[in-house]
Image 1 (tube, rainbow, N blue to C red):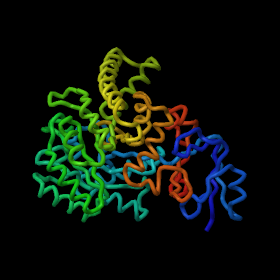
Image 2: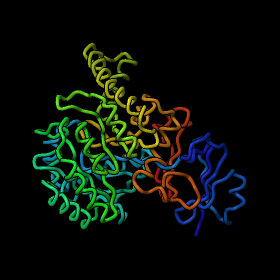
Image 3: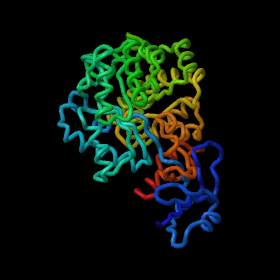
Image 4: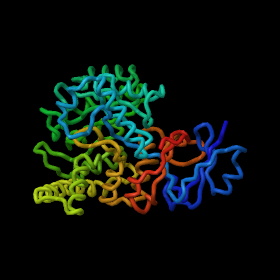
Length: 415
């Protein structure tokens, strides 16, 4: 079998530390068989090995997005309009979004909830080689209460027994993990600042998922739902916004202590609350002189709103270790287009991460959080050769993450 040598000016292996210069990765049968200086790798490679020279770029493990909604377009339309589309159109939308994420260096994703069997269909299409895209973990349909957030995905369960039945059904259909809506959200008629399920109901989901060796993730915008999730033993908390019923963000130190003590993984989905795509666009207009007065006023309002969320995140980091934070885009909802995990890494730097820590969060730490650390997340011998190369050093300049020059899946170049 032909081996491939992938050479780069810098290598950030996902394990922290300073990137190493003039390194190469030797790939065989889709896995990394050696990582060393260019000369050493050239000497180890079998005769006829193919060489890919990435020049001065920085080679990193492929990025992992812990929170996506592939079937939604992220084009600013309301949920009611997005969910008016057929399942077939949602599959096509998902295929397009998978390609966009892959080209942005995102080689693994969690699909956090789609209608009916759309998520399962996309994963099947990927496994058959019918569509390109990142490796996928799918939750299928998110479990929600009657009239709850994302109820239009059609996995409604009220009470402990119905929740257990939903977990069994989803596992039977192929769910890699279980997603449950522990609070309201952006769905009309729900209240983001109120819990949707009790501690006992969430525990039923956790207990049943553990029976099938599945991890759990809970949508928790409300502080009340966050408390319930911690006490129920949820593995990964999504959003963690500390919202009260009146819609205000109010950081709770006691809750943060609970989160730190139990070691729950946290995916803060910062770009979603902060409306970072809109802020980024308005800042560009301001900087090139094309912004109107209304644009500048809107930018000021959005930046103030974002700062409130970032302040809460900074306070949370006074209690919870950075090593428990999992970046996630929430792509697909609202105006969150695919291909922009870079926004979330920028925001992690805003709240106190170094660029290197932000990159590590999107690689090694994310792989640990979703149970794939044995296969992905670092550039080490034996792991799958999912790699991305950046123009610049992302451990020093987080903006380099937006400058992707090459992407590899199992050693095969896909960009």
